[in-house]
Image (cartoon, rainbow, N blue to C red; front, side, top):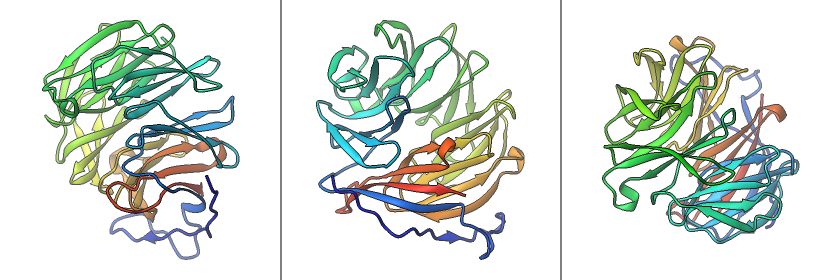
Length: 339
């Protein structure tokens, strides 16, 4: 694909009650590169980074491909076909394979060097969002739901080396979205979007130990966990909102508006920054240094459909995949420098 470089720009919009960003201050995000992908339609889904091989991987959900980019230059390297609707990508340091969840054709096992198909994992149809527990080497995958004409959803735990199923939980909910793992504990927090709740799962026993209502918004879809502060950051779509929840009690402590049509949540724990990319064409940036007094730093203009991303904090970059959706916009991967 042709590499298109554009002049760096970013538009910062003042938000009432937000931290002021003066004209003399450096913008929090600065667009430094745009790689156009002409001929693509529909939506992209999630990114993954393969640092050992110097690559970035992107699931082109509606294009039914995996897109590979150079980690250093951002150049588009190749397209990998053979999928139905790819969503999440698991890259493990030192592992010879990667896994790609596919709501149409189950979960694929690929050679991590060549991307040749090495096998598949048989799951309930509708494999989509996923989370990896590196300590126990267990991959948790959301399956089922309304997109595959099912009235219930599941979370399925698998061994990513063998594909063996290790456990399964059924939810009486036809729309289950993203999840967050507790790194130093056994809990998993998962969005039950249809019933507007967070389910708390004991990963060791594979049982639901609590369900907490998410108020004051609906369609909770993304979640990040700040283990130090004992807080969950939950992104809702109706209306667009960041909801902050106590991860021990489920109590909602505060909330702020968020960009619409968000499909990802990028949390920099060290810098105390939360990035919410919205499909309307803005990314919301929040200061989480005091989680019970969340502050919106800025809204930075991106592009319509730029609703999934990848945070590369070690190199000070944030990548966004701009999906053409149902429009005639050109698909693109946008790289922003973080200031």
